[in-house]
Each structure stands twice: as C-alpha cells, then as structure tokens.
Image (tube, rainbow, N blue to C red; front, side, top):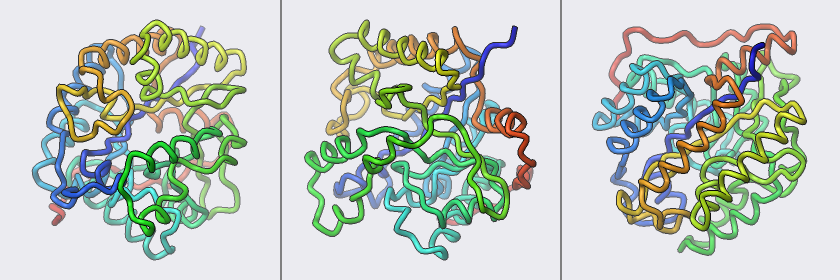
Length: 330
C-alpha cells in the first residue's frame, strides 16, 4: 500500500536577508553562511535518500561567490524554487511592474547559477498578493507556496519588532510580516487559485490541524531548547492529526535550523540560536525520521503534480530547465 505524500522544502534565506529584515547594519555587503549550511544540509538529506525543494534568493544566485554552493544543490538532484530576488517580506506592497521585475531577475540569476529555471515560488516572510499570483500564472509557474495558515503571525511579528531597532518607516514596510491573524482561517489543504490566466496550485505551509499552530522545524527547535522529548512529542501529535484529518503535510526548513551559536553569533535575536549546532542537528534528524516513517517525502513540484492530477486540473505551462545558463551580473 502506498504511503501518503509529504513535501519538504527549505527557504535558503541567507545571513544578509535576516539582517536586512531586522534592520541591522552591514547587510549591504551580503554576508553569507551558504558555504557552511549547504554542505551540512545536503549531507543530512543524502544519508536519508531525500530530495527536497530549495527556495533560492536571486540576489545570492547573482553573486559569483555563492555559485558553487548553489550549483551543488542542483547537482545533488534537488528542486530549485524562486524565493524572490531582494528577499523583502513587504513584497505584497510591490506594484505589478515591480513584481514582474523581481520575478524575472530572480529567474535569470537562479538559472545562471544552477541551470534550473524555477517552476515554484514562495514569498519571503509568506508575503504575497493577487498581483503576485497573477504574475506567477502568467509566467507559467506550476505552484505557489506562500500561504501560512496560523493565527500566531502577529505574535511572531511583535517578537521580531521587539528585538529590532527598525525605524518607523521600516516598521510600516514590515507591518504584515508573518501574516495577519486572518491567515489562520486559510485552508491547510492544497487548492487552485481561480480566475488566473493559467492554473496555479497553492500548497500551504502546514500548521497543526485544528489548532493552526506552527509545526515547522524552527518551532520544534524552540521547544527543543527546553526539552527534546517535548519537541518530538509535539511533532508526533502534529503528524497524527495530519493523518486523522487526511492532510498531506508540507514541512518547512530554514538554514538556521542547522546552524548553532557555535557557527553564527550575529543572529542571536532568533529563537533557538543559543543552542549549539550538534543539538539542533539531533532534533532536526529526529524530526526528519519521524516524517519519513509515516510519509513518502517528495519535492514541492512532485507534490504539486500529484495534487494537480487529484484535482483534475490542466497542466501548467512551466518554464523549461536551462541546460546552458548564461552569466548574470550582480
């Protein structure tokens, strides 16, 4: 009997993007930890035979010093998704022309760095808008994965603001960071966005069925600061509820899930960044083992294909992979 599907993805947010959103000085030099975190994640996934989706930021792909790390992801057989060019969580404030340029620049840079042109998108900070969805459909994307059905977005935003030194203007830009309270009423089940030029599947980031509290790895690590057993029990309950409610989970990872205080000290404002890498990796590996024990873990595009077939939706006209990418200037 075939096991139910679960998709797994990693938003490859880089150090500079967190500093930028937090209002920290020095982000403009684009400090990076990709050379540390990418090999670490790839090795962990390889030991489990997992292929996942990496949502790549275009600005990172445009910098020559990141090319080797990004190419190694594609070489390992993982899917490459688009995570915008500038990684600004106020993407929902962009005009239609700005969105088109943002997507185009990211596509070109990512294709040049990896040889893969993305067919899936996730907005930074779960930011999206009707204009963005329309542009994704027009550009032939297969799926979007920007919705985050939880009521706790405003709480996370308040914590983030409390630890920052943002100006009033910067706070205004970030006023919908992590989503509004009403996001909690969104469906956990994948669905089709209607009234677009082409069919576009939405794959929400899964939260706890019924309670709608976050279950992705960053939250497990927050609990793991106090008790690894509690973190494992929390995730086990989430997976049980997913099975009972027949939700195929789409689980989200972040680079800081695999970096500890012994790797990175400038991002101590993030929860769980006081933990050493070894403890984080132990919790991460346990969570992945829990997931693979109950589900067939696939990429976002594989999940989208299964959803599309299940819904009887027509196939999207997606951009083809690029076999001979051209250099893109930073």
